Length: 198
Image (cartoon, rainbow, N blue to C red):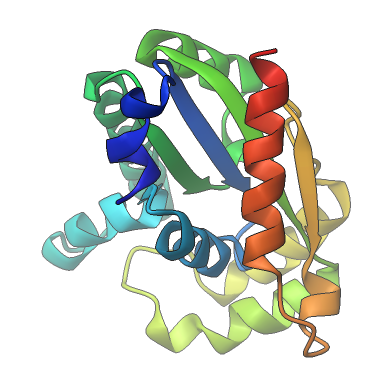
């Protein structure tokens, strides 16, 4: 049984969110999927909501892609807002694309009272290589190779949002065949949530 379905039975009655944060191609989606499979918590991702629209719409340029991203972001928090108390969600996104105050407002309106963050750290050359290798798999409407110089600058400047405890995952180490330990991350999350309610 997932933690979502058993939470109220265990005495937990508020909403909890794990923010899996990082710039594009930093490994956050794979980590979020693995964490969801291990924990039973529902994973919501920006691209997971946006991509079906990109499959249907034609001639999506970067400004319209951003509008779709903003709408998809709102959908995520509407889903969480409509969920029952005792729910836990994993949200996979690059949270730096919006002002932090926007996220804080969404969290408040959704009734989220506990937040932890998994930060995916990656260096410029590695993220550029990852992004370039996936260009052929990306749907029309997503940014292309022209985004790589901007992405490399972003890799040097991006930081976690720190609205709660932060667990940093070094994607540069993972690239050296040292896989992330989902069990350890899940235990850290549970300990962090427990600390927040003490």
